[in-house]
Amino acid sequence: MTGEAALRIAVLYPEVLGTYGDRGNALVLERRMAWRGEAVEVVDVAVGSTVPTTCDLYLIGGGEDAAQSAALQDLSRTGALADIVSRGVPVLAVCAGLQMLGQTFEVSGGRVVPGLGLLDVTTTRLATRAVGEVVARVDGLPGVPELTGFENHGGGTTLGPDAAPLAQVVSGTGNGAGGTEGALQGSIVATYLHGPVLARNPALADLLLSRATGRDLAPLDLPSVDRLRRERLA
Ligand code: GLN
Image (tube, rainbow, N blue to C red; front, side, top):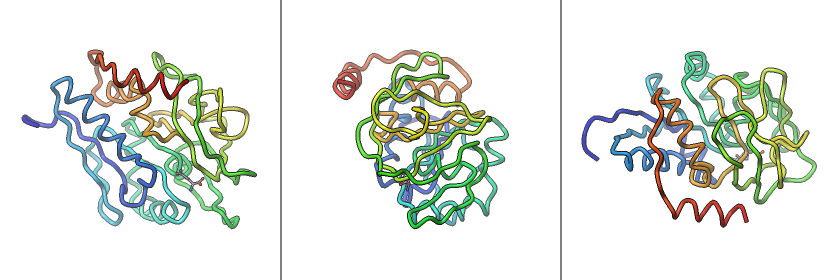
């Protein structure tokens, strides 16, 4: 890659929140900008290090209960995300990321952990762990067609009045209550979907990139990505 990085993407704690390949979301964003001839810098933020406040887009992935509790302790200490969200900088939070941004979440064994309170959602335990493919019809994001992804979570999430559903579940579990999947609030897009979700859903990747750059992006013609979507949706 040559030239100045126009866009900086932070990946929070990939060493503990990357169990399901969610760091791939950063690669997808980086590639989609590179194919448009634009440079991206991906900043991996390690647990214990300072969260940079000057990035244009923040990614938080999924993880096991213990890993997500440890990551949360770190994030609660810094307060950086509250500042980032209050400035309207886009954040994509996947699964454990969604739960951590919420009001509280319950880990296996029944302990209730206070979240960051940036997303008006509350997570309790599902009766049965949700594992498998998900298809969901998007509610609140213009131009984003139905979502495909896979889920693997023991927590189920209820939305409070300040959060809107990201999508309605067509098949799979998603949030687990009321047939919704994920949540939207301010600059936060939160989902239970892995895949990585942006590899399976390029329109969502481009929406986040548009928000991060503050401009419309030229469409990309990528038959292999379209084929992957078709195959997964089928
Ligand atoms: N540990 C959380 C749960 O099981 C999140 C799992 C995940 O990120 N895939 O609900």
